[in-house]
Length: 336
Image (cartoon, rainbow, N blue to C red; front, side, top):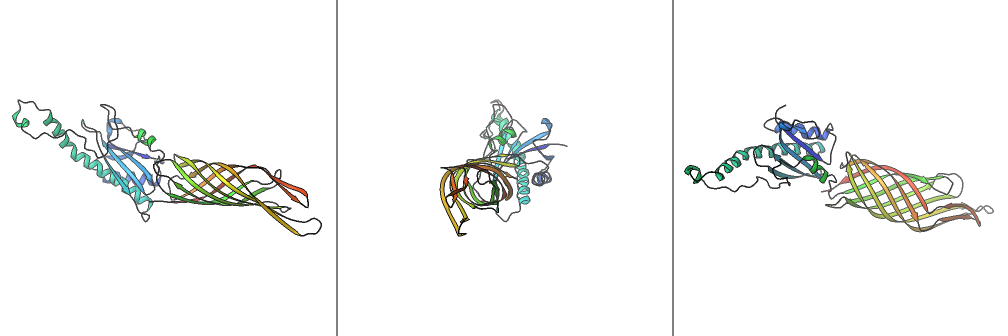
């Protein structure tokens, strides 16, 4: 197999995915000697020539760090890539692979010069030819060097992946879908659409979100019920493999509406009431950090109090203060 460039991607992706294959193939074709292989695979440590760490900060921004294992020095180079919205997804990953190969080449070319500098700095005074040579600073050849243990090689790729597992970036997401959950106490269920807008905050794995949903009671019998909810809150997320896990909370206002005919006159009567409350949800998006993804989740809410529904002075139903629902939808994300 020859010399290997071990590539670690954060957040992790399936090594057989189209994106990972595009990156590794482009890197292997461009690297001078050997091949580029995923760091998760079983590699012979003696065959590893360099370690590359790819950190996706957002779908449009990636940081590439490459460390060379040859020689006594642990030299690192880093480069940040920014893509435009018109760049195809696979082309972005190929560009990252080519960047890895470029940095490996730059480090390889600089390594002999660094080794010559070491020999010059360590020369004895009795060697006049080398003693008169200009002394070069013994500094790593990196613009950004990750921390290493004394005498150790480049930082293990797994450590960098753990630090960047959140893969934070500043971008928006618009999501729409449907939800279903209990409606009246002991009665039919409610179902309807929802719309939500979220914004991932920079440098931290947190986001803000605004929600709007509308639901109707799945029953042909009276009363006819509707629920209109608006919410504003925040949450935290974590990328686990190809999925994005989210936990969030929100303050909400919910209007419960009811309409029915008077049992004696047949006249239509309707009414509604707004009620404040709190909500919480656990959600998952797949695949993570893509422009388009599928979502699902479960949510719960607690209103200030329950609501009684009456018709001609008679109780015809009640809405409990605590409710829950499951949801599923489609998300579109965009950013810088």
